[in-house]
Image (cartoon, rainbow, N blue to C red):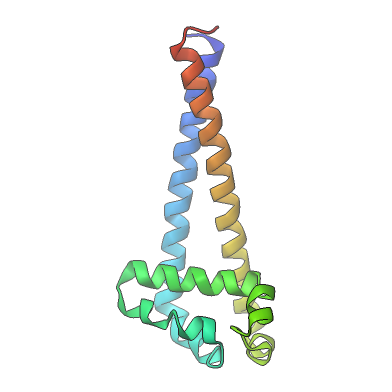
Length: 136
């Protein structure tokens, strides 16, 4: 086994680990959605961007994951929504800080896993293509 094919296998296992972590994170979003979603929505009653997505909680587990993840995204990057009037500044200020920190951390981990997956997946594809062409 050449060094390049060994690297491709390592990238493949790393990519598989990232996929497992993404699914585990979706489970965490699902847990937060089912356990704290009513409380979260109660604090964000004046936010138009969130009220427009409220129907997702009745779609099923995937809707709950999407609603919780979109709320986490709005908490992480509220500037765009504040600029266009989709989020109330008073609601964001009154939101419980511990829950806000948890949502922001979940969203940042989500972004990091997606970026890592794209980078490792790209590196894996380059290695596999190079190995298939007979390199090293």
